[in-house]
Length: 346
Image (cartoon, rainbow, N blue to C red):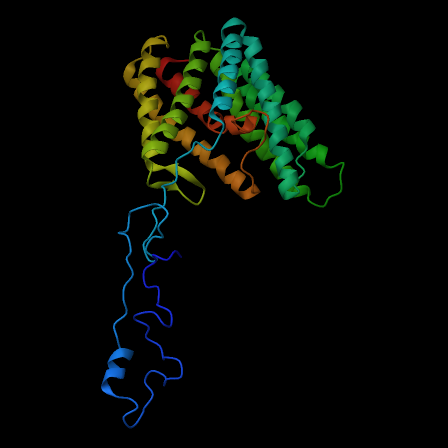
């Protein structure tokens, strides 16, 4: 504290000293006789002098008032990820997908199969690392790739047959190991087969239509627009949590943004990209995509929270892993496929 601090007590010998004088009685002591006369009492009880103190808010070197609160700067909102890397990776993936989608359909089916295999590898790896669950990767990877191809070549019937054979292969493959943990391993394996490759087959089935590339492009655009709308509106206006126990970052305002963005994009896509499509069908499609994409995102958040991890992988800078990008796409694929068939046929 500097000499100009508030309430600095004067020292002995200075004017205003309240304490006892040298050799005198302590303050408050009872004395008798003329030794303690009135003049001495008056001198002993003089009011303390207040030193000159500059007004608060003067020079920066002056000490502030002891009890005055200091302003705390408000925390600055951040995106939480490297946006430049995320945008760069997203653009690169978009170029690969669109190029394969409109050049050769079979190449796009191969891209989907590769994404499925990588996603299965990430999921089974995290299950083993965090929970000790050993879902057999080999039959899942082979069966998953075959499932996507079967869905493209034979439709829903081919996808269901490949799914059943993959589940059977998981049960048999796990028999080569000790029986301890067999039930949880095969259960996780069947779940992984349904969650990743089976849902992805609906993307391949969309591609088989005459305007298949445009249907797949609509599916991708609506899902991306829904996620973007949820992020933009939730980051700027989000206050009310949507599911705090599952994903604390998601808000109801973000969900409203996802619905609004997806419905507008759906109306435009159905009107201008899909043959025989109508704008009102796009509104319904956009609403359904926003709902399924949000549920898919929450579903994977539930899995990651149970596993105690933030991302499924690190393959895509700014995004995490492949599964962190497929979380909203996978459950949305059968929804878009079904509504497309209902609106404009197969």
